[in-house]
Length: 195
Image 1: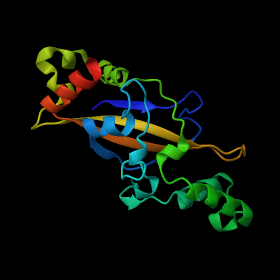
Image 2: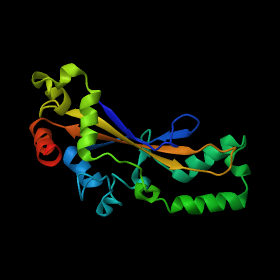
Image 3: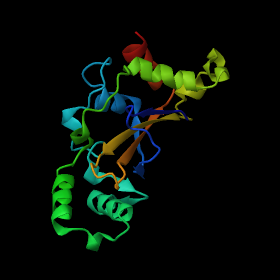
Image 4: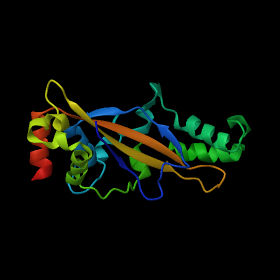
């Protein structure tokens, strides 16, 4: 299983809160339809999918429980200020809640800084694989088979910034498990990516 993560220069992991949402399984074709739907050379979320289970923040889960962004963020803010949610200033929490309620889909966090073409993304997956896996007789370890699919993890970090120096930035980690199952995956790679 290989993992590709999108994050910009400022978006380092260290010194931030990380909220890791449960991963979602997608086929390689669904992945392309979600993130490279117009052009395989440009990462762009498909606006027709904004309300889908794949992109809608309100439909995501964390450790199997429906994710509540408002409670999670306010809890982290309160923790950073060494207090509890009920002791946070009412006006501030109302403003935060209003802003968070407007974040229904990950496209609200755009732009996501990613210069990788789909081809470069999968070249990275191949480079991250061991040399032995890239040999022709072992290629199934990268592209899978119908009976034994391989999953590659594609992580997107969405940053919630706060100007208050006491409060850490918060990263929402979205994980997509991209299923490759042999011939289907190989055909997609050949047709859409490598040519």
